[in-house]
Image (cartoon, rainbow, N blue to C red; front, side):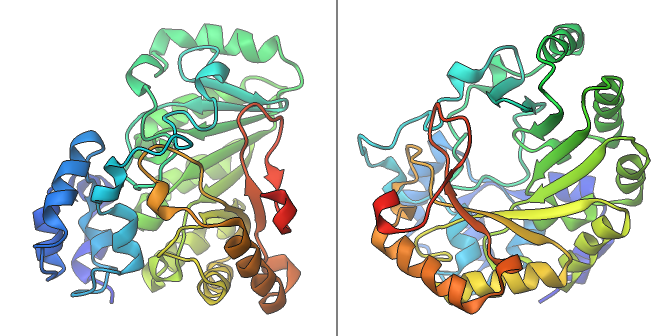
Length: 338
């Protein structure tokens, strides 16, 4: 159901209109809190609850198993210790050459411009990342520029975070101008969940900034379930293709959220309605606190078989895992891969 109040708010006001108290979230959704509240409060001490009210408006009231709610509600299972689930599952601290810089893949260069997110996803692989020690300052640009120039194979810069679309248009424009001054950089990729949880972020000013640069812009959104993509959200996402911006989606396979083929088929179809192409279907990164979302290799294999049977090839996302130290994402298909 569309909440027209949130249609009228600009994105900045929505970004500050957050729910951070588990009791308030459960109360808003008319869910009995007795069984969930104490665990949510404990789990939120180490990784805070943070969700825009507009996104809560897409959740089903009275349903503690709503797939959107499960992605954001802290859970007592996050506090369990599992040796294979670690704080840096992708080995990113070893690839952190300069503040704000992650260079894991030969031609791609990642900038973490902010540690802020519009929503705290409980499965986030960077939920333990030391952002305060790694954010680039204004005077760090000369060192970043020199690093890129010393690595001429870099032709694509990825803005990540945190979430880069929590930054102002002015700050994004500044970084885009810096990057487009480097002739070796041809592509700018922006990874963001904000267009899904606050679609108004794709405002006219931002779209014009992205349209006017010489860089080829790719926007990778993060949606895991078709219920995240209501008509209003799809209408905003369509504006990306209308402005010549390539729009892709990457999803994470999550137990209890989207762990059946029909749910993922519906996600791909809904994305296509919004002119967004399915890109990656990630298996869960083994980050500490997210083990309750994990699935067995045989279950993943079964789901993907059914997706292949149910969708045309152009709507099938690539099933992948990221392995620390590898030079690329690892494609997965077949039980022997897991």
